[in-house]
Image 1 (cartoon, rainbow, N blue to C red):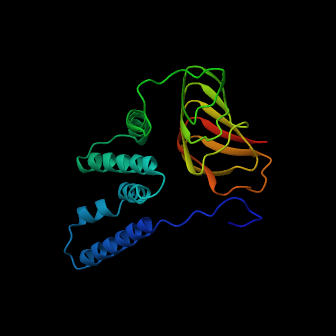
Image 2 (image 1 turned 135 degrees about the horizontal axis):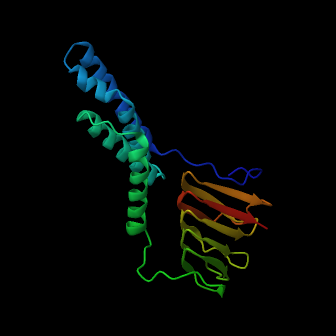
Image 3 (image 1 turned 180 degrees about the horizontal axis):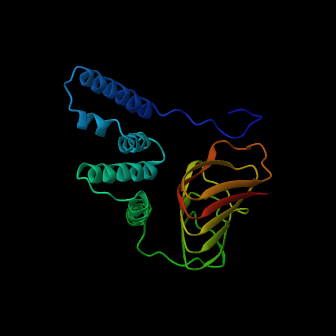
Length: 239
């Protein structure tokens, strides 16, 4: 890690590079066979199409952190390829939004760390090492005072939540906090010297890291923020 730049450099994913290489070889072979007339023109048009491009980009993201983004692209490309094969004319907007909502629903159902006893966010403080916060059509604030904070999950749907970690301390190693924001927002208030990695997928949403950023004092403790933000936002405030 560069002492003058506390933001760590993300290592390259070898699996993603391998998949890209295999796809390049496959497309090259298909083009070669096509030039010798061994592949039907309609099949060639289907392979070298924008629908297939979506599927390829999605497949590459399956081996990266943006798996749900990859699944979205594969689903959209596959649906439009089937519609094109059966000569069904449907606009992009008719398929895009329903597919996006369905995939987000599956994310909520099968997401990691899912618990059946989700609860509405409370105003107050606690010393829990792992949090599980749900804010639906509402919001609130949570003050975390754990001295061995290990992450957890924050789900915000049509609402907002504020998680204050100023009086908390990260546990040793990597601690994962998963956020899911749908038409909502999540605000995290953290100390300026925390080592934070953002691995969030954004779909018509965004994340921001604001405030005073100081050098990381203890690089052995990391907060990894994962999840998906759709039609909403997540914000980190450092003090």
